[in-house]
Amino acid sequence: MIKLVFAAFAPFLLVLFFTRVTYSHVVGTLLTAGLLIASYFAGHMDTIYIAILDVASLAAGFIAARSMKKDKKTST
Image 1 (cartoon, rainbow, N blue to C red):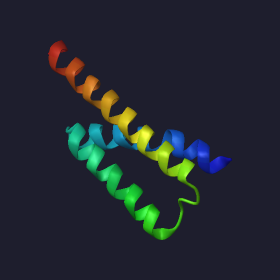
Image 2 (cartoon, helix red, strand yellow):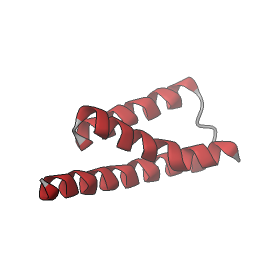
Image 3 (cartoon, rainbow, N blue to C red):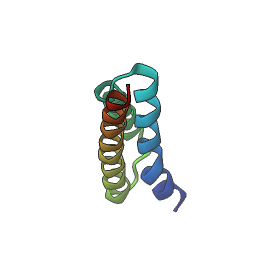
Image 4 (cartoon, rainbow, N blue to C red):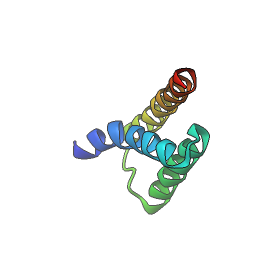
């Protein structure tokens, strides 16, 4: 159960964090995807539901980071 909760929120937050650090939503998404791939090969994704939640959270993080970057451009 705890893995499902982490799969739902961790990639989203990681994309936002890496976007703030690197100033690029694409790089933030690629770094997070790399971490997800590494965790897959390490055997931390037990079921298909965890993988689906990871990808959905990654996509939601990308969309949120992209809109965050757009808001930042229009406010300056």
